Image 1 (cartoon, rainbow, N blue to C red):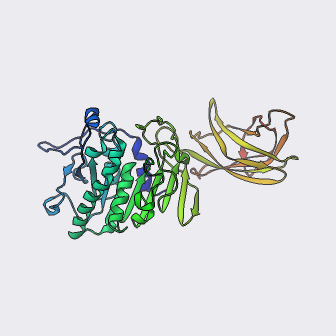
Image 2 (image 1 turned 180 degrees about the vertical axis):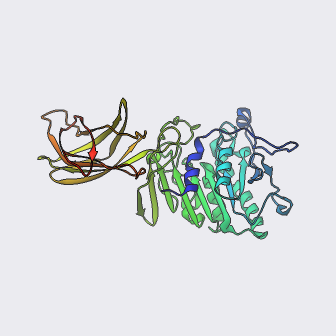
Image 3 (image 1 turned 90 degrees about the vertical axis):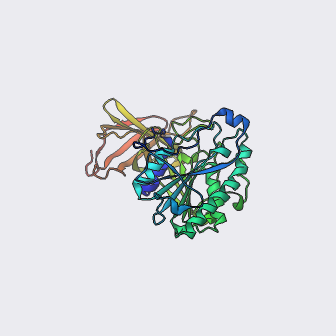
Length: 400
């Protein structure tokens, strides 16, 4: 189970910007709103820091970079999270900013500071925006040093960077010798960073803890592992429900399979295309007893009346032979509370020649997120490769 705070962060990037509100007589400081004309002309870097706390969640307050004691809402005894956006090819404010601010404030009483470097990030020339990340990092580093001088420990600082913002956060962490408490990189940018050295991009040495979420590695995201722990949503490439353009959002939820690699942890999870993004997972245990060795991909459907949901287990070819026990993770987009029928198909790719039979001595379905539901079993099923077989599930303590 992923930490609650991280789950909130993983789901934030698909939601639309809410309407800004302020109390009577209050004047809010809003994120810089530019348009394509600014991007065509080009913008020069200007960094603004917008503070949000539980007492002003819908009304940002711009901070003075040097006189922190004059900011009554900024409580240096609380943890501080900095939210850093990335490249803005249209100049518009990120649609996810407001929701992220609220999610962070819900988890803990803290200062949330939105780092607005839209003037700088809003350039049609991507390489100009990349150049500005170093300068913006120096600006933010100076502010955090001032925080430290006024009593805030670096361990209480959490930098959350999206795309180019992830590398910007890494530069800040490197400037502070890796003493920042945490950096979260959400889909770190790939272009101009793919062949970069650790000093030229986000790296585990940039903070005491660095976690990275990958959602677009096949397009604009950075491939590989670049944190103490790296999360790969749906393999880290295209996300369900997202348009495949630079303007795309991100759909995130959960499941994890953890492995250690060179001292780093990789976590893989799958999502659906719509809220709540979470898939229903079953552990499927099969014991096969077929005469000939077969390799294949497994398709499983759960049926309830006219409704059904399907899982395709194709991350690797599975081996089916005499008396072989196979354990699978099957994930379904829909939660059918009463499963009345199950159908299974094993595709071997055999399109010529005879269809070989595959015998299942037992197949058992264990609901992983719904422990109150009974296990479902079936015994001694004869099926042909590439052909679907359907059966009514039985309680695992009974046999036909």
